[in-house]
Image 1 (cartoon, rainbow, N blue to C red):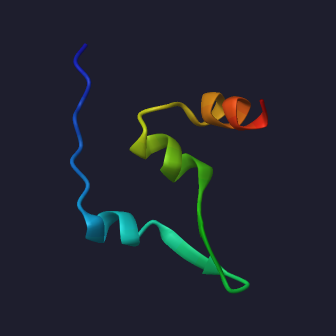
Image 2: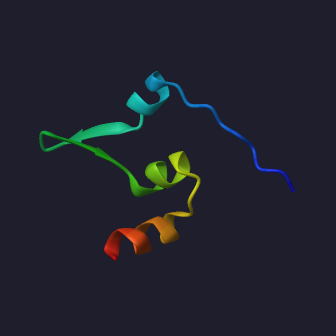
Length: 48
């Protein structure tokens, strides 16, 4: 099974950034997608 390579341009990344209470944030699932991680692995590594 081959991995699909997604190319995301700056505009695509800007669409993943939300403003919550005056702070710019990204969802963990979106960050995991950008770095080709699974969300649970990303969260585990952030906790360490």
